[in-house]
Each structure stands twice: as C-alpha cells, then as structure tokens.
Amino acid sequence: MNFLTKRRGYSVAFLVMTLSTNVWHISGYAVADIDRGGFGNIGDTAQKRSSHFGDLHRPGRDNRAQRDLSKSQLEPLVNKCFANLFSLSSRGLSPPFVVGDFNGDGMEDLFVPVRFVGTIKPTNRSKPNFNLEMVLGTGGLPEDKAFYDLRLGDLSVDNGQYFVVIHGAAGIPLSICSSVRNRFVLIYAMDKGSIGIRLYGGQRLPPGTIGDPNEDQPPPILKGKAIVLLDSHKIGTALYWDGSRYRWYPFNYPASK
Image (tube, rainbow, N blue to C red; front, side):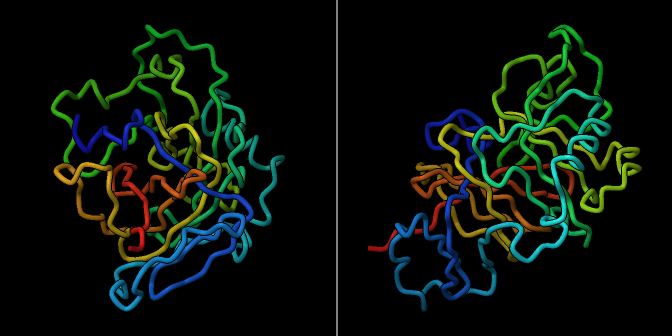
C-alpha cells in the first residue's frame, strides 16, 4: 500500500476538526486550541518561520457568504446539482458546511457533508453527470483506471460519509449546476473520529506524515484554500484541489521536543 491510499492505519478517507476552538498564529503556523487543551507547544517558532505556510482558521467568522447561507438554501441547491441523490447530513461534523475559494479562481465554493439517499443499483455503470471522485493522495494516478474511474453504481456501496463540492456556488445561483465541471461528489472522504472542519490558507501545506518515512511526500503547493478535517487527537487530513481533482495530504503539526 502506498501514499495514494495509506492513511496512518486508516482506510482511504479524511479527518476533521471543529470544536469550541480558538486559533493562535505563530510565525506562519496556526495552532488550534481544542477546548483550551491545544496542540501544546509547537517548538522554536524561529525555526518554523516561513512564508510558504499559511494559517488554519475556523470557517465563517469573516465570510459573509458562510454566514448568510442557510439549510433552506442549501437543500434545493444540493438537490438540483445532484439529482436528489443526497440529503444534508453532517453526522456530527461542525460546521455543517464551509465556504471558501478551494480552486483559486477568486470565487467562493461550497463544501457540504451529505448522505446518499438514492436508489441506484450496484450494476449501474452509467457515468454520472457530475464528477464522482475517490480522493487520492499526492502523485500520479493508479495504473488501474478502474480504481478511480467511478460510475453511478459505486454510489450504492456504503462508503460512509460523502461530501459534495460546488465551485462558484456561494452566491446560490442555481444555474451553476448546469456545468458538470463545477460539481463533485467525494467518496471515501473521512476517517472515523472526525469532529470538525477547518480551512487552511497559504502557499503550501505544512509537512505531514503518514507514519512511514519511506512513503511520506513533500507538502503540495495550494491553488486555493485546503479543507482540513481533524480528530480530537489533533491529527487529520487536508483536502485540496490540484487543478483537476481533489486530493488528500496528512495534516499534523510537528510535536515539540
């Protein structure tokens, strides 16, 4: 198993973090204080100072689109864009959706946890009219195209928490659904224990590890904001747009010595 699929002993997925959280900025890094427990000391901040890294923040505090959206607006948008196949379902994640520029085009995008409520048969090999993606790690695509070339029938398998992403949807124009390239359904997108959602802004993600130095990869350069999912142990996954699809990268701040 390689970096495409391996996630610190978890199956293919993501992690999240929300909670009653304050955010401190330390020389280019942001440290989330979970219920005042925090990540602990990050170490010598002078050694970690770098303009490459950005900050982790709680969605919605300074985003009018995030504040103005409501469930009554989200439901018809998700229904229209995804043919009534999903319903809103955060399964304990907080906030129940986030808004940010994920692909770097200057427009606000929408990320929503959902559950599958359709009645598609597993044998249905039709291509969906949206982008159905298993989120992969960094690097090239697997040699076996069947691993990532998903069809409608793949939605009928219980893949746990689903996420939908709609590019440019924060203004809620229903016409945004007319373009397939704007709409994504992400499967295998969350590990167990996830409790919240954060956004990360910066030139690139901080270095992360999957626990195997031989398979760890350098942090990717970001085109837009990364969606960060963390658990109560402050370990998680960043979901980011690579220019053509969504990928994941481990998100874990270096422990101080």
